[in-house]
Image 1 (cartoon, rainbow, N blue to C red):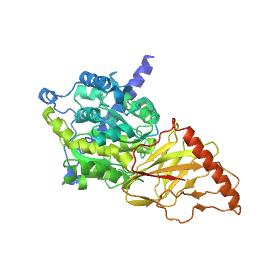
Image 2 (cartoon, one colour; image 1 turned 180 degrees about the vertical axis):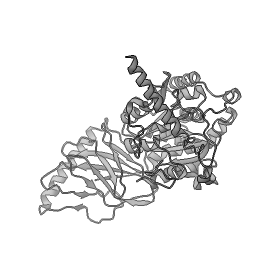
Image 3 (cartoon, helix red, strand yellow; image 1 turned 45 degrees about the vertical axis):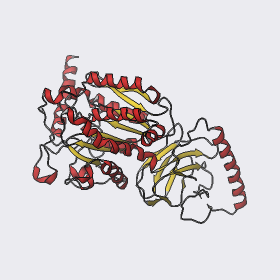
Image 4 (cartoon, rainbow, N blue to C red; image 1 turned 60 degrees about the vertical axis):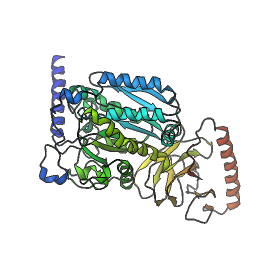
Length: 486
């Protein structure tokens, strides 16, 4: 037994050593310190210090972990009508990872998009935990008073994790209690460095389980040490520093620009054009949280650097909050103000099904929820898209080209079970969809009359089902949305 324990400890030490070695190339979400500045040009910053010198004067005015925990529960008591407090796990040192959920129906599952904010990923970047509590309290204070606050509370399930790394904060260093950089601890698409679950940190496991349990549409983590909105990919296949876009590069650029353009001065950056950057172009990292969210959770995540100073004086926090307030609100609101939303139903039963949706030409898939069959597809506005819904056991179905302008589009799919012909049918209705096809139906087969009769019966059954299920399935409340049934 003693030999076994010694062997386990040696393995943990080796893992910690490797993690510390990779941190030499880390940054405050993407720290480039500890590297050759000649390769970084104007992006060079001294953001990483293994033991940053954080004085008591710097800490004064920031909430301790216990004070933050009390603040979270006090918020839950004060704003109980629009909030739920829950924990997704514990840190190495057994501190609960508390989450605030904000919604007009926080205890219910709804066919609404879900967004999550995560703060304090790195222990020496505490601004996010303070700003996120400001955000929660602002939404509570302004619900039913401010249109944007009301829109978010009534149409989004917003989850806020003020601190992912309470131990690192208490220790005043970057990593967790094991001195592991949590933003390098996720499974990576290019390298197998973090594939062994036995060495994964409890904070990382908590986030991964959380993403697997909730149906998040998008998210953002808050960091410090720069002023920029960072988007995937974070790394490259050959570890080179170059622009390396993911399949949804255009959409991520749109999301990052929503944040940057709403910020007080992020978009005016002289280092980053428009205040946004591709992670691999800025500085490649591996085992990062945002790439894992996109690949394994279908969750579109940004890494937001919201303060040039990693640990500014507490007196500056109200100003930093005001500079980021509209950015945070507009990013969350963009989930319902734009994009393509809807549900997927089975034609034979009328029941919602957890299918998936793809955009033609974009190699990524967004899954519908298990409960309501609802999906929420973020996509850059101002262009035309063909949307395809599919699920195993059903014939896929596609729209003709849909023009996504300055409002969201509601696009419901009714999928036919696999039949002998196995052909895809393209349908659209006359509800105002801007589609590039003058035909109401596109089908193959000689018996058009019989097909129309069956389709009519299915439509009547579908409408009846929707009416009977009105109390169970959410009808979207955000009015400026065009509705299309396919």
